[in-house]
Amino acid sequence: MVELARRFLRCESGATAIEYAFIIVLISLSIIFGATEIGNGVGNSFNNLADGFDQ
Image 1 (cartoon, rainbow, N blue to C red):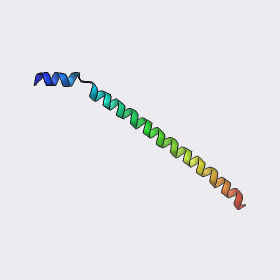
Image 2 (image 1 turned 135 degrees about the vertical axis):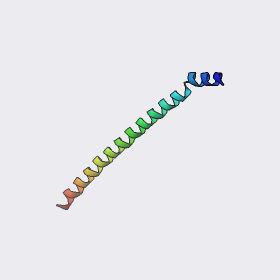
Image 3 (image 1 turned 90 degrees about the vertical axis):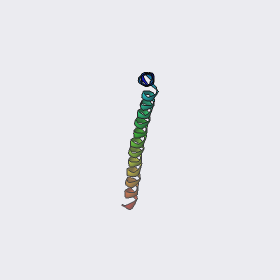
Image 4 (image 1 turned 45 degrees about the horizontal axis):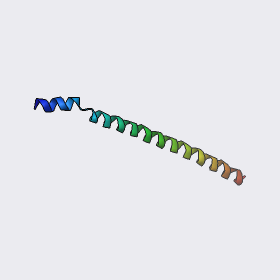
């Protein structure tokens, strides 16, 4: 049992998995934020263009 606890404490694969998960979350949030901002900008551009045609 003690040997099992020692192996568990020395094992770094869990920490590596957590690091990868953290990186994936950061990349995902960046993509979502960037896509939202681009979408808002494109939407505003089309709204401005449509307002120009209404006048």
